[in-house]
Image (cartoon, rainbow, N blue to C red; front, side, top):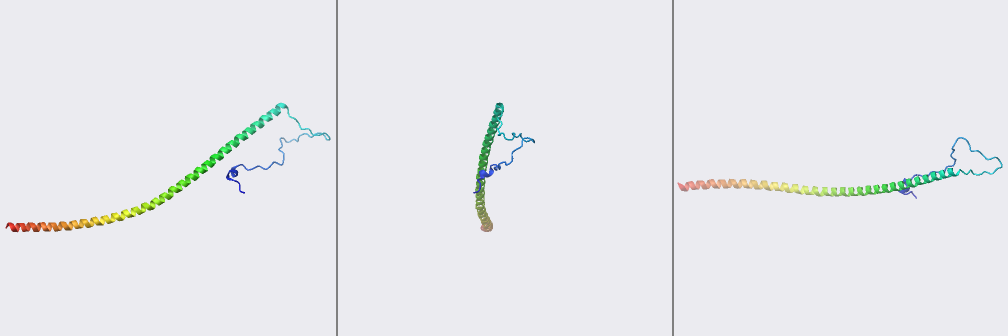
Length: 151
């Protein structure tokens, strides 16, 4: 199957080396013909130094593996937080869109009510002006009648 995301982030495996590494440009001495090859045993101090170097290299590898595992964990955490934040933002955006629709309908309703109220107020004012004219006419008529009665 396909590699998991964790495997995809790990370093690719290196193919095994087919040619030996050459330490110097000279070839190592060959044993004389007919004699069996005996591996050279290093001096004890040299052997101890090699073991220390190997131990240090292994400790470094373990340290780097621990850092890699920690970095992968942090990356997973960051991705999870980013997904969670994106979902929250999408929810807020949907809520805002819904609220905008509701607010738009409320504003339309309030504008219609305001317009109707203004029309009602205009009618009331016009009626009051008409009533005032009638009352003023009646007051003049009453004054005229009072003056006639006084004569």
